[in-house]
Image (tube, rainbow, N blue to C red; front, side, top):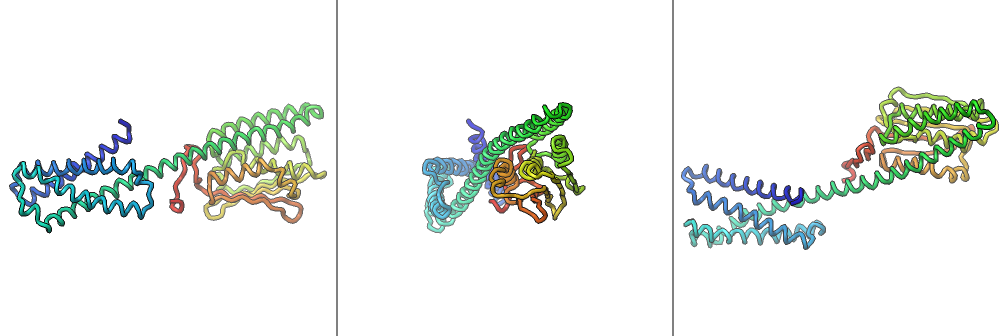
Length: 359
């Protein structure tokens, strides 16, 4: 028996046993001299309800009732519980006859049939509501797990693209130094190993602390400053509360790398990278400025880095995060990233959060 079946039978048996217990207690309170026959009859009634609801479920499952539209399902349920109420009422009679509790005049009284059948109809309707609710919650949780697994696969694919992209560019930078300045190239290799060690640790966490991402960015800029020397200048203006946030690993580094590759490296006099953060409400605003201009050609050649960043933000934060990259006056490109305090998808545990507006 599967875990799901065990849960079903536990709820069925436990629920109808509780119903029998309530009936017996109510009978004892209503009459101080409740007979053993009456107690046996109430136990039989609960067993009968258990069997009827089980066979009703067996009937529903092949017919795929749970995939029907709500209106159709509601109509079928109302008709079914009406029939079930009448069925249980008349199936009680043989046992009441055996226990000498049967009174034909009372049993076949239309008012009695309507009244007691209505009670069973309400009980069976509540059973259906509980059963359908449990099913829909279970299906919703399954869909969340499935979506989360798909999201995790997509994130892993994005990260597997990003690391080779970063390593390739870093190695190109070091290659340019090998013949020109062997000492600096050795220094660059040491810095690259530090960056890789940090980035690999960050990858395992899914999200990384802003402090750790900032350290990778500074290591990367240190590596690039060996190549660009005085042509590359950097400025940092970090809000103290930024350290409370988590960001996708290598996200800021990717934007900085993009600014150097498509902006500063194409300027004879070099340029500057500015990284500034501040808090608006409960969101972290990250602004990265680099010298240069965003052209249509550069925009399409950015491809992997920018597209990757947008996809990861969309997956992890949904519509709560935003990304934009625009030209500014004074020959600058501004990249702005807005990070909410809580992700929609927790990449650490592979869980997709269900927000009220998505239910």
